[in-house]
Picture 1 (spheres, rainbow, N blue to C red):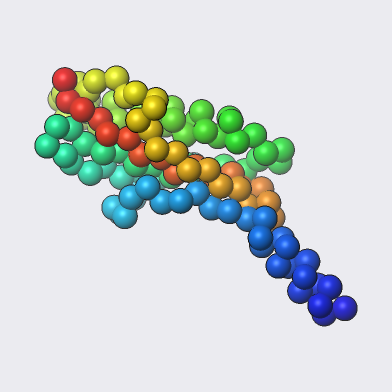
Picture 2 (picture 1 turned 45 degrees about the vertical axis):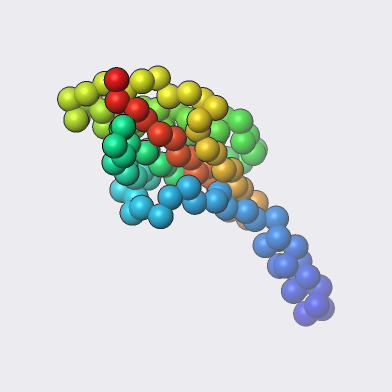
Length: 118
């Protein structure tokens, strides 16, 4: 019986995956679902985010879309606070990693992209 319970726990944990970190910079809370980090670069800055939310039915595409939108929004907000404009962020330049914890129902996304000053 113990082996059966142990086997079930191991299989459950094997189904859990977290999104790979895109940065080692300390992250600040942006809203309930989002943390972000901004790293200055000579030609602009690197914006990295960690986005997660509960989903009863897994919809990774919806989380990926929300993650990219949050990244773009945070980049433009940071540029606005700096009093500058940035070039449009190319979707192919966004590094994205997805994960899902089947036990808790949390789907997560980690993303980063360079933002260049105009």
